[in-house]
Length: 83
Image (cartoon, rainbow, N blue to C red; front, side, top):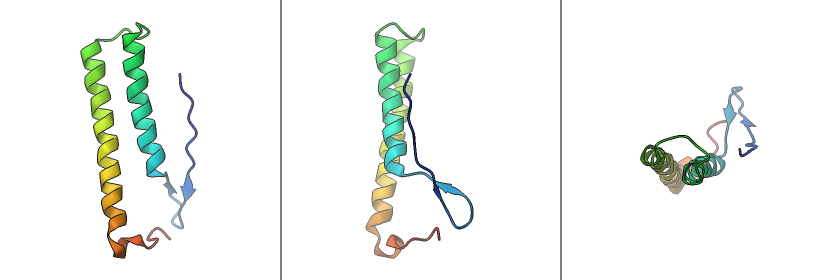
């Protein structure tokens, strides 16, 4: 089992922000761990299902990365709107 610490950044409104790079890294790490566990026989699950679920997590991480890149590429959005 992996242990991960993700920093939470408080906003002026009281809600937390989580760094997207750490969220996507976590999603990818979970996907890899699932695949390794099923391939090593450590997880009693259907291998095809685990591979499909891992692919969904990887695609979600990719989607978050693309959205963040698009967001930071627009000059008007580079200001800190969460304050």
